[in-house]
Image (cartoon, rainbow, N blue to C red):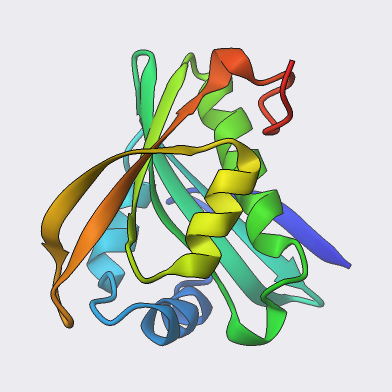
Length: 159
């Protein structure tokens, strides 16, 4: 059974396991310092999913005033399409909404059809393009937006 928990700088953050998933998921992965720095910020939310003690996914967001951004969301390749990403996304949205965020943004590679479908199914809409935003390979980012006030309980379901 998958367990979900918040992570912070003071706890035993499973950095090696998160980095394993990060490197397998992204062509330009975050560094260990990127994660450790984010964990030390009080405006950040980091969640970890694990199954049997093994990290299966994680998500990171920042929240300031009434806006938030989903910065990073990844699931181990063998655990994809089992609801882990959707659950992490829902928990991130609830966490930043609980902190007062009403507008939530994210960027996703144009070619990442699976992620775009997940975000769209949750209620994120495409609102713009950042041309040549990503590198290795160079690719556009699709900017997506979620209106927490339009959701029932911050879980992606409509009122």
